[in-house]
Length: 383
Image (cartoon, rainbow, N blue to C red; front, side, top):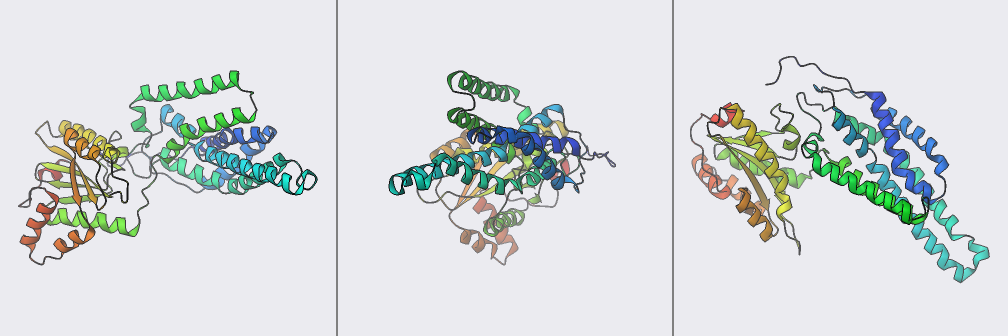
C-alpha cells in the first residue's frame, strides 16, 4: 500500500563519492600494475572523488527507502565496472602499440624506435587519462540513481540479486579463488597477474554496473511497442506503461517490462522485441526476465486479492526475425505466451481498420488473446 505522504531520503553524497573513488582505484589498479605506476593510485582515487562529486552535487531523490548494507555492497562493486572496462581497454592499446613498435624495430632499428614497452605505456596511459576525465561523474550519477530511485516506494535494482545470496557467494568465492591462485602461480605485479586481475574485475563488476539502466529504445522500437499496446487496447485491455505497484520486491523486475495489460481476470506482462535476423535466432534467454517479473507479480497479486484466481501471464511479442526452438520450448514449458508477427506492416494493416468492432476482433485474433467486452476490469481494479 503506498503511503499518502511517504518519508523521503536524501542521497548519501559522501558515501557515493567514496564509492566512486573506491571503484576507480580498484578498477584501474591492474592497468597501473601493467605500466608499473601503482604509486598513482592515491591520485586516481582523489581525481575520481572530485569527478564523482561533480556528478552528484545537484542530484535529488524521492526514495522512500534507505539502501540496505547488501544493496550498498553491490552498488559499491558495480562502481568498479566502468573503471575495469577502461583498464581492459588500456591493456589492449598497450599490447597494440607494443607489437607495432616491436615490429618497427626490425625495419628502422632499435635506435630509432627505442623500447617498445615505452610506446605501449605512453599510448595506453594517454588513452586512459583522456577517458578518465568524464567517466567518474557519470558513474557516480548512475550509482546515485540506482541506490536512491526517483520513483517513490521502489527499491534499488540490486534487490532482486539479494534474493539469491547463494549465487552471489559462489561468484564471490570463485573470483577470490582465482585471484589467490594467481598470487601463488604468477608474479604479483607482473603482466600476467595484472591481466588475470583485470578479467576478474571486469566480469564480476561490469554486469552489476549495467543493471537498472534505462532502456534506450530507437524510434522503430518505440513505434513497435506502441503499436502492440494499441492492438491490446483495441481488444479491450487497459494498458499501463512504466508499471510500478509500490512493492519493493516487484518494481525492480518490472523495469524490464514494456507495459502491463489488464483484461477481465487476467494481467498480461508484456515485452515487445525485434526478432533476431540473419543467421541468428531469438533464443529462450529473451523470455527469462519476463517470466521472473510475471511470477513474482502473480504471487503479490494472489496475496492481495485473497487468492481469487487473478491470472498473470508473461506475454512476449516478437516482430520479424527467426525464433529458436529453445524459445518455443521454454514458452510452452513455463507458460510464456509467445506471439510472432512477421513484420510491422501486419500490425499497421489491422490498426487501419475503421470499424471498431472488426478492429477489436482482428486485434484479439492477431495477438491470440481473448477479446475483453464490457467496462468492468477486475484485474485493473485489483492492482
